[in-house]
Structure formats: C-alpha cells, structure tokens
Length: 474
Ligand code: SF4
Ligand code: SF4
Image (cartoon, rainbow, N blue to C red):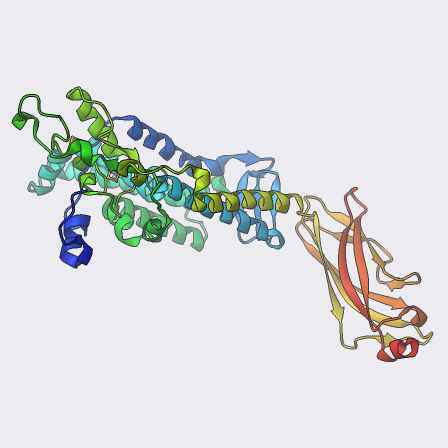
C-alpha cells in the first residue's frame, strides 16, 4: 500500500492524509451505478419491508406479532411470552449479537453495507434525491443556485417525501406494540395514547435527521459498532480491497503509452459512487461499510476498456500479501463465535420447549416459622400463587408431597385461574411430629390442570420443624 514515509509515528496530520477524515463539511453526492452489488443491496434492503408490513399480519383474533408492553406479554404467532419467560429472549439476543460478530470476522461490515437501517434508509433517501434532483453534478449545481420556483418545488417535494417515509417509519415501529389497525384509527382521530405520539415524533425526527442529513456521519462518528469492528477483523477477513500490485502506477487512459500495462486508469469512479466518500485505493478505512459499490464501479470501467474485473474486489490481507490463507475452521474468532451462535440456537430451542402453561410460586410464611398443633403435629403455612399463561381459564388441583401422613388445608377445591391472570391462596400444611426427623425438610407442591390434560407443574419448598425434635432423634 502507498503510505506516507512517517506512518509509524502516527501523528494526527499523517492520519488525516491516510484516513481521509470526513467531518461532514462537504455533502457527499454519491453517483448511483447499476451492478451486482447494487442489486444485492436492494434485495437485502427490501427485507426491511417486514417492518412496514409485519404489524398487519393476523393470527386468530389478534395481531400475529405484538409486543404488548402494558399487558406484559409478547405474542409471536401462536407463542405468548410472559415476563416469567423473558430469559429465553436473552438467548435470541445473544444469537443475533454473535451472528453479527461472526459475519464481521468473516466479511467485515457487511451488516452495515447491506442491512443496517441507517445505511438502508440513507440509500432510500439519496435515491429519492437523485430521482428528483438528478445526478451528482446537477445536485451540486442546484444546491449552489439561487432560490427560484423550480428549486423550491424540487426541494419541497424531496423533503415532503422524506418526511412521509419518516412518519411511516414511526407509525410502523409503534404498530409492533399495539394493534396496528387501531393505531391508524387513533392517529387519524387524534385519540392516540401520548406514548404513541412520542414514538411517532421521535422516529419521524430521528429518521429525517439521520437518513436525510447526517447520513454517513452516523457511520463515522456515532455508531458504536463501527468502533469495535477493527478488533474483530483478522488477516483473513474479506474486505473490498484495491489490488495495488495490479493498479499502480495509476495512469489516465489518454496518457498511457502504447503497450503500457493497464492498471488503474484514475477515473475516480470508485470514489464518486462511495456513499461514505472514501477512496478505497488509499487502503482499508474505518468509514468503509463494505457495500461493494466501488467494486461495481471499477468492474464497469474495466468492462469498457476490455480489462478483467477485480482491480477492486473482496479479498483478505493474506490473499493480497500472498500469505497462507486460513480456512474458517482454522480461525479461533470464527470458531468461538460460531460455537456461541449454535449454543444460542440450542438454548433458545430448549427455552421455548420448556415454557410451561402456568407458573407456580410458593412463599412460605415465616412469622411464625411453624405452629405446634394441639394433636402434636407441626404446621407451616404458605402463600401459593398460580399464573395462568395459557389461552383458556383453567382449574388447578393442588397437591403437596414429601411425607406419608401429610394433611393440607386450603386445597379442598380446585383453584380457578383466568387466562393471563394470577390467583393466590393460603395453604396450611400439617405433618405428624414423629415423621419430622430433620429441622428442615423438603416439600413438593404440585398443580394439576383439571380443565385440560397437561403436565403437572412442581415447586420445591421447605418445611420447618422445631429444633428439639432432631435432638431427641439423635
Ligand atoms: S469504499 Fe467501496 S465498499 Fe467501502 S463504503 Fe465506499 S463504496 Fe462501499
Ligand atoms: S474505478 Fe477502478 S480504474 Fe477507476 S479510479 Fe477506481 S480503481 Fe481506478
């Protein structure tokens, strides 16, 4: 790579010349060119349509995916997750976090380049800008031109479209948390809840600001992921890279001597298409979102001058330096992140399968710890709570196990628990003194659904007896 002689000293002015600091003082008007990576970018970006369309899917009589915060329950098609089972979602989050790490180790910031909402919305906004204002030079001229009716019309149209998309983004986000159809009705009749208006305002303002104005500056200066990517790369990470050995010295076509080897023709097409304003020929840089658009641009130039593709291509440092290439299974970062991804899948599957239809909890009453009854038996009291997570109202029979002659008061009739609700009762458990060999003994509580045939749910608690019983036994 071409580097300043004193790069090792890493002084600020040297970094400036190498890293091409983009502080946003010059607006980037990237040129839009067709190509395989551009097409792929549209395809991956289109996956975000699920954000806009997803809330309108129905499942039975409700929204298919609904994060019902006031009701403290998440509905994901046939599955309902209550706060008791929220731990399962931590494995889902771990899965996505480690998938991101794995992808970054393998292929750099592909998430940024093809799927990140900041990149996708910015791309959409700049596409609208290009449709209304024209190619980069025309846009620059329009910005510099004095205001007239034509300029006003174009600018108003652009900002109106940007604001409409921003508002639609806000409504769509809010619609995952409440009934989508009702939300539209509430917004139009000005009856929406205050929190819905706040979400709408935040997302409209945020999208308009970040995608319309800040654009690549978010990737450069605000995004924490951009900061940590460098520690995830290794010598085998695939990144869009300029083949310096083939490209240098750069020579304009019209200045090229006859029979001169054709390298980089210094057409700057790779620079003008870059959405973050980078010249990839200066080496890999922190602002590169690995979108591959410079590859499309350079390949199209190579097509025109009948040269092979690949002057800029996805490649690793080891490949370009001619060093030994490591397979994915020879790279510790890939192995560790893949293992965590697989473990997260297993843990999520286990978690989803272990979600029970009801939640049982027992709170022992420890004031007093126990009561010595007139017949000599020892009694403990407990508060039993049952949360019904199923979709039907159920009756639960309550059983207590652990001693041969146990007697229970409070469980004479099955406990009715409405769906999505909790019910609680007090239980008094008495055990004959002679059966209590320890001061503290295990006790098992069990609820059996008598409305539907489903597995019993158990909870292990403790029974406290007077100390002298154990001493007598010893
Ligand atoms: S340098 Fe190339 S890959 Fe990197 S952001 Fe610019 S266009 Fe995309
Ligand atoms: S597009 Fe290719 S040929 Fe043109 S300046 Fe960039 S690297 Fe050189």
